Image 1 (cartoon, helix red, strand yellow):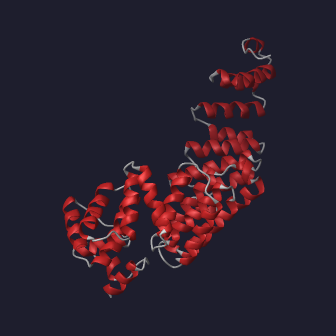
Image 2: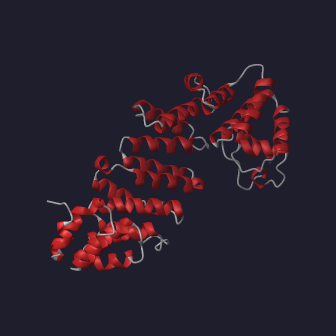
Image 3: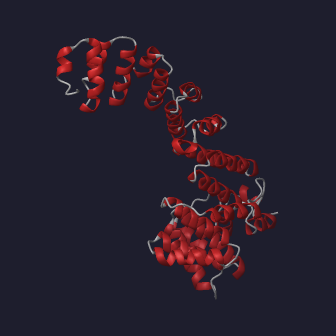
Length: 364
């Protein structure tokens, strides 16, 4: 049974949920090493790191290269430089010649430690060596380009799609698909990006939360002027379940609802906000107030704004007060703000016939 799990890991596939590797309670030595290679959670102490080095050293050379390379890459992905260096030291010391996993991990380590030129040279070599890690090298390079806000080449998007299809059913296909979605979003093909994420969820249901988290981020970060109102609204409302009931999900939901209001779709914004359980959060209340104002319901907006002390809330409160004809109160609310609201103050003062305030506003 354990041999079947290990074969899955070597082939880059997730081990079985009911298999001994996932169910193991003793994570020492080789079990810990294989769990790391499979991407399963482990707890590591300084002593465990020494045991892990011994376990890696005891593996046959070919397995040592594959498993050691994967573990070091996972450490680097998570920003754990010291454990990654431990593994790479064992591989460099015990392997007569560095294999593809080791060469890629060495290049990633150079990047992570600031040796950019040498690291990128190693990444490019690994990508075009046509080895079992070429797709990982492609992934590393494209991620770096996205992080640096550089436009990803169309061929790279095609290569990501091809690599994900080639690895269908394997764990490595999932991050390639998510990266392909990010590249589509970069070129403002938001609907296409979310379609890729939808398919990734179908193919990898165990990683639904991760995929939805990315989808929510892409929706919140979208550039409205490039995407288009109709595409944005339909994409958002088709993916309401992507916004989780936690702080990050709420922040993304609020950001998206604000975009819908900006597009002149405040009723859709209110529909989206209605999914939230965090209705008492300041950001949620501000977003709902803004949408209520845009639908001509200033009384509801004022209810949402009650007790909020921020300048942003005061601006909205003044707008709502003016909408219901309480011009004097709108003037008083706006007087608490900086000069950036001088024009609005002048409008409210004029409506309130407050000539003293109006004469002080320096607005012609």
